[in-house]
Image (cartoon, rainbow, N blue to C red):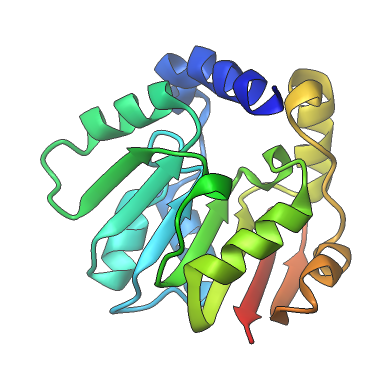
Amino acid sequence: MTRNIIEKYFDNLAKDWDSYQDCPEDVKRALLERAGISKGDHVLDVACGTGAIAGVLHELTGETVKGVDISGEMISVAKSKYANCSWAQFEHADFLNMEEGFFDDVVIYNAYPHFLDVNFVVEKAARMLKSGGKLVIVHSLSRERINSHHKQHADRVSRPILSPEEEAKHYNHDFETKIAEEDEEHYLLVLEKK
């Protein structure tokens, strides 16, 4: 039931989604470089929306970038935007129901609060990553702004996120924390699969 509510919520926003996004490309690039995304990495962009970081991921890796999103409308916009980019693959899929993968990095950009059960994220990320692969949870906003925005506009399709250090505790069994930091402009948690 919740999956359908989240899917419909984002389907309704898809057409205008890009007009709400104001994070400059160089800021996205700096955050993803800080997270350790590098040449040759095979990346799964989870909850990719309209492809907000797909171009930056491709620039950093030089590889095909696969984006998945629960919202079919978001994926339609992404496919349209990147229609001439052979390196971009977008799929209407629920990350939590995907088959096992073999990725170097699983990135969740500006979407982590919409995963209501963190235990499923832990389990699925561990199955999608190679040994030594990284789960990157990144926001180009502060935790305070994220939580405030979601409380006002997306309360029924999100949960408050904790500090990076507190969120990292959910992952301790399968992952080692590499970076757990936040400030007034970003939130970054990088976890390496054991």
